Length: 161
Image (cartoon, rainbow, N blue to C red; front, side, top):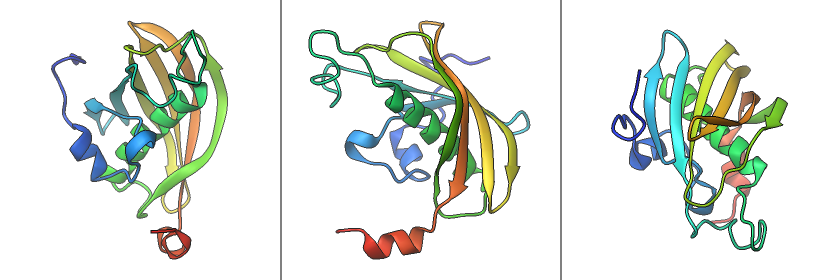
């Protein structure tokens, strides 16, 4: 179907055209597969000893925080939604997580491969995606994520520059 090492269809620069996250909160390295008809997308995040969470989570036994695994899935889903104009909005935000289960660890140096599948969408209101994350073909996280339109203009007005 796809080769995670060789089939990059969107690198970090392409992802940045759809997603606003930058610096430490960017949790997506590349997209390697997209099937609009099947509403499926696959991407990954490469972890390293330089990641901001390594020093403190947890000393002597660094593990990628589960919330960052979910954030990576959210960014992949957001990329899909924005690239394909599914919600018809400028910015997609977290609307909720359901049935999230952590089944394994992600350590510095691991590649977390994430698959998202859109289950339903209501333009201007909500998108629901199921996601799974793998390290070396082992399931480490799964769940459902909701995305909602964010009022980008209103948020810009109060954001510090």
